Amino acid sequence: QQSPQSKATSATETVSADAAAPAIPAKCEVKEKSLHPRYVTVIVPSVVNPNGRAARLKAISETWGCQARAIYVVHDVSEYPDAQANLLGDGTSVYPKLLVVPPEITAEEGVKRLYHVIKEVTESELDPDFAFFVNDHTFVIPEHACCYTSGRDPREHLYAGHAMRNKVDAFAFNSGAAGYFLSRATMQGLVDRWGQHDPSCITEGASKWHQGNPGLLTAKCMSEALNAKAIDTRDVHGWHRFHAFGLIRTVTGHVDEWYQNKHKDLDEFLGPDEAHHHKLGTLYECCSAETVSFHYVEHSETAALYRIMEDVK
Image 1 (cartoon, rainbow, N blue to C red):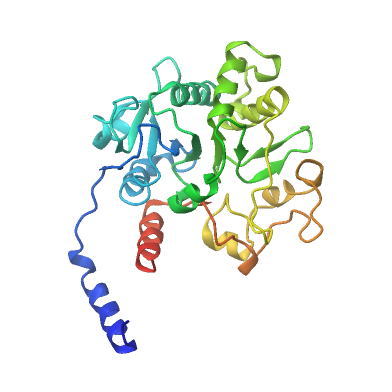
Image 2 (cartoon, rainbow, N blue to C red):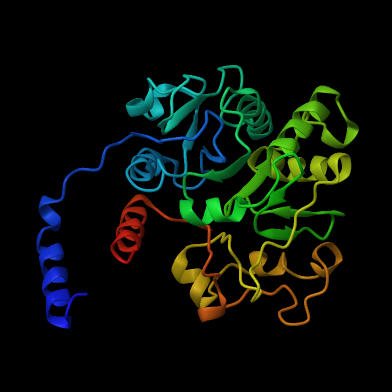
């Protein structure tokens, strides 16, 4: 065990050596016990600051992306050329992988793209137990994502993230920004219902709003056709694991009013909450020690957060 003096010296040496720190590889191979991973993280394009996407994807690949088995959804391999040889279905455990959307689906067609992505992940040789759907502004803590799936059966439905509600809808939905898990059974159920043209799962003729928020239509399909509903994913203290804002705004509670309003009257879907009434917590009550994700995290913040987490392990 180090003395206080030796600890201080080590910290100083670490800081002074930062400039000479070796570069982190842009891709790596995950040692899997089987071809089918416990979970993969599917990363769709963020609609915020698209010009910064390349830098965010690079930062993810150099930090949490490998351990979380990142799959980048792209419309062209030029969006992340470092992984152009690692396509979904390549038979390897090298990450990140690219899932290339066919040219007939444009970047503006978010509903068709999400349908295609879920179908491709479900039918791929990876056949993961679970898939965690996020966008490239999301910061993921892979160990906590893995822990969240521990003990869960992929043959049962799971739709788990940060639950909210719209007043006009008869179901709760999970924030796409905070990310949400789908089980193998739920993904397969969606693909089946879409193929059967279930009236609760229609993807044709979606509005521009839904094209930018396709998860709302997916939530409707899951709730009405599969009985796979958004669940309360908070920990035993009632503190959230999945966050739709960055660390500082989440801690201080300085989040948008629309976001706060979508937590009203959640008792109808998630059950009564006498302690918090499903309101967002602040300060030490903001975030579970088992937090899985934060959002609005740019590339430099991703690098900093990951470095700090690695240093304190």
